[in-house]
Image 1 (spheres, each protein chain N blue to C red):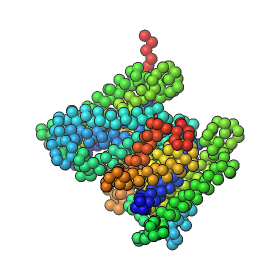
Image 2 (image 1 turned 90 degrees about the vertical axis):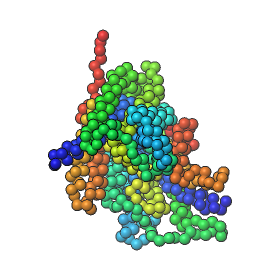
Image 3 (image 1 turned 180 degrees about the horizontal axis):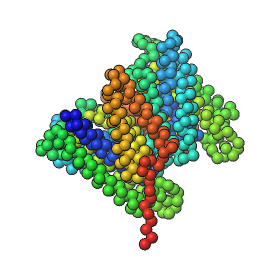
Image 4 (image 1 turned 45 degrees about the horizontal axis):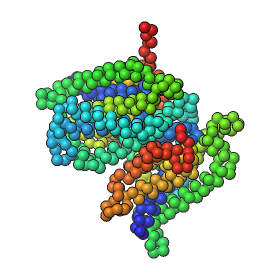
Length: 296
Length: 314
């Protein structure tokens, strides 16, 4: 049981936090701009490399240097929206999906060009896990990731329900025509969607890069699970996306636990298939997600 | 010798170009006619390649089969398995917005890659399948064999082209275009939209499987790295967009033009100093990504724009 918590549940919550933060952006963009953003994973990669570069120059803990990655991701997202997505907004949204697919490749080749195509670590050396109550052995990073994600989730909740901008965002997501008739500045909402989505993506990218290592395919490899998380939470429901991300992360890790026999229930090499099958089941039986998201 | 080498190089470029042309025609059925987004082209391509390899290789203890059947059986089996895979994906998400199909097709490509790498009883894992036969492999060797294969690949392109062209002008194709351009009115006219979309996706995937099989028999060796997932998928999209989606001739033209540019820049960059070679491949990817954005914004109808067939008044 202790092993289950230490080796499966906590790592699951950690990777789930990464999915959650990425899925918030995907869910909001899908809700407000009406397209599946295929470059979101690579936006995480860009944010991660932003912090990595800062670490090379400033000798501080990577998490303290997060603003550099966030700034880089926000600038990239706004530039990409301005130059590549905005000109296509009048067309059927599937064109924007194709464009975002291309942007994913652009982001990745830029990462390979400016940084390296190999693995890079934020902090080298082995770190011992923290022992709590003599039983729980949890790495410092996992605790930081889970706690920071909870703080971000709470802040996001208050932002969406209490601030004027947050309410405008939910309005555009729920009923775009009504929102624009009511005089909401849609372009402003769109800009802030990118800012928030990119900031969270960069944070998630740094978490993922610190948990393993930074490489140009980091974000793309997480994309499928984040889509599954966004669908699970309900499209256009940021808080649902957070729950969805945590559920997918825990499901992926605990699926490899020795549930019924001494062997892993699902071989660890098929871990990333779990997210896909959750998504397939959702699309078949409950495409609106757990929290009654939009069905586009 | 220099001329012979150049000719040999041209043959290899044209063979690969032909395989891309088949992929591009397949995507044209799905996207150009049906308006369906497939982001997992590499996955269906890989299914076809592995199926044909397993069916046609000699008996082996390293992977499933080696059934040693003639190559036409391999091609047919490749189309069937890729079609079935496509049917599963389409069945799940054809009734939802096309973005979901895009997500699911990326997902299935990823799952297929995992299966190919991990299930070594089936595919010999990362070591790959060796000794995939080439048609008439015992009759001809070396360059003559390549020349013969070139003819065969382009015969396949011709067959697929004729098939796609027939599909395009048929009532079936007309219905598809009606669904693509205005789903609601097609539905109102009593067309079973989901059923048409399902058929379209399956036909496209089957043709992608054929392209995979053609590439397996060309390289005679198959490993997971042969199906570089994003690059294949992405290049095919750029080819179709640049060539003219909705037009079968455009699909072939686009495949050849983009493939020639891609290969020509490879010749150029291979002469750079070694430390620049890896870098230049990233620059090429970057430029292809930018090319797609340009085509999407300014050049959507492509080199050979779609022309709807004339309406006969008899």
